[in-house]
Image (cartoon, rainbow, N blue to C red; front, side, top):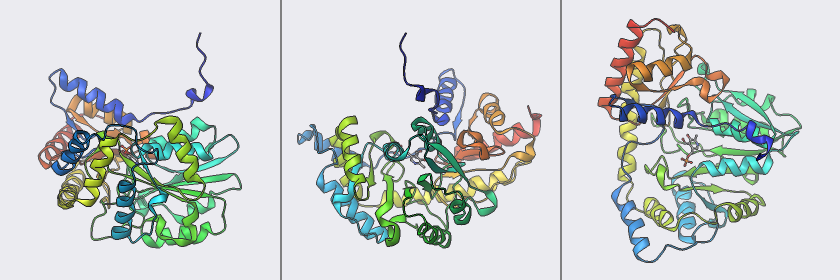
Length: 393
Ligand code: PLP
């Protein structure tokens, strides 16, 4: 009998993929399913980006690249961070990654081991906790509360830090809540971190373009006092509608860069070359498509929030970022996962139960509004009919 390591009893998954599989299965059987489950833009990758990848392959860029990524792409990332967020980054600090997830995988692997604490947001992206558990480290949830507009609280976060804490994971704009932590709160966190010089911070900023109501995104790299211990996770998946290209980047401070480079050499060698050339076109080409997509998400955000607040027993705080709404459904009488499952099976609307993002997700469901306004309105109608006619199960 094969005996794999015990850590596989602890590793988790991302239920959004299971819901996607079930929704696809039901659709294949002829059911009309509206998918508000998976978090991926419903737009096509802009043409000039696709063309750049095709050209790269035609030009013969189909071999290995350096493990850290091709230099023009690393330069483009550094220039983008400088122009857009006024963050000074050298191309030698940029590593091209096969998507956003590998940066969390590697950072957690770098710090996680038995006896160590890693702090992560709850509700939050499920892979954080999954990977922390995999390494044997202790997962310490940082509560993300509706009454704080789903921003993290600096005070609450700092109180959870112990001598065992090695890594703090933060995510703003956030999945699954759409919360954006205001600059004043980030300032407080950074000031408090001065007391804990051995704690690294992994800042997941993959939704940094999707901040609404005229707010500016706050990048953790813009704080010189913690610059030598911030890992930045970002990528192309959400901003440029490129989830399937598997293209992301990390900024690794100090010796972590070499740790990550070694992991890359051991794991994936390099990111596929055509995707990297596409990444250059995305960052250096026209940004009109990004503006158009973000404006569409913003308009749908209003539609989804307004519609959800009209449903019986549902309250939805207006999300400030990303493309998720996280309505409170506790007054419907339903448990969140039971509601998500019944909505899919009976009403043909795929959403994700809040507990799939952590224990504090009970009482909430997540809707991704990366879908057409027409579909969102249809889904809201179906949810309204369902909640009015069906007793909580
Ligand atoms: N970080 C957050 C907060 C996300 O929501 C996601 C994807 O849903 C990722 C990272 C992963 O992005 P990628 O698909 O580029 O691996």
